[in-house]
Image (tube, rainbow, N blue to C red; front, top):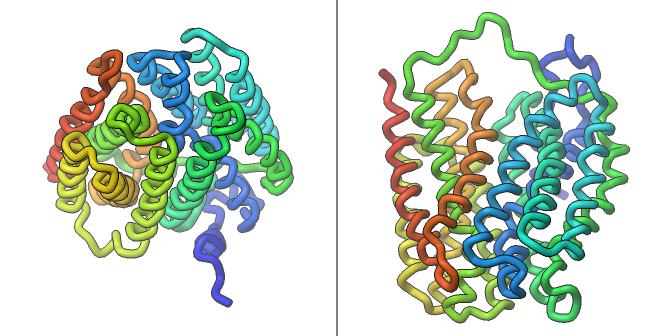
Length: 394
């Protein structure tokens, strides 16, 4: 029987900084860190399913949806940095427990909270705690011999989990807690993940920056990095409002859940295709083309409201979404072989993801969210140009 591709990737992990952390990471150690990181990022894939009921049941208005999505993603970005830093003085299990417990509590609290401010506080707490779990995965990936392949495996794992949850929630919600089920599911997943802490290594030290590494020359890599952040800004701006948009064009709740799940499946295929074929493509023109194609896809969502067209466009949106991310990593490494700029990629991507719904919310009014999709079109074109311009060495 052929081995699982994820197991094959995990088996290639070695410790790069033996002096700082003499205990090698086993495949189980790495897999446990990736699982916890995937849980911390779960909300990114299921936002259309869990946020739309808050609007439909009158707990928040359409313009406030962007703020709720933004504060949680921004908190994840902050929490990921905090979690990675805490791994130096604390054990991996202590950091994981410090993330899991408030993560579960914040999501359970959603059932009883009302009003925009308490809901924002709960989502911020959930994001900060989930970000600490992401920090575990980030450090595990950074310590790998081939971090780009392990990163692709991480993308596949988290997207498969998001797909399963997004597909199940709308059908179960017909009979149980329709406005809160997504958050209850996150809390239950956190509870089920407690035994994973026993598989984590005792220590998971971040790798040290090699001495004498030169700083990148010029601004080209930083411009490309800004383009990478803008790409995620546009993608999440559209994705956060996708469920509400589908509802407004008379797509049923069950169809919205199915479409979101299919889009997540396409994301898995996109990540797998990028890991398999991405190294054969030139990074700069590929990212330029992907940005323009994504803009065309969102333009199509605005103008073709037939259910079949919406499903097809959502599939293309999901596939291109994750296909671009490994290419972004390779572009930054090509521009900065010392790999100092690429260390900022995850934080910039999460920050862009956080800013996207907030920016889109400025162009959303009660009953109309098409402004969010138009925002995505404009920012996607901008991101494609930034990545293209940023890849020209001075």
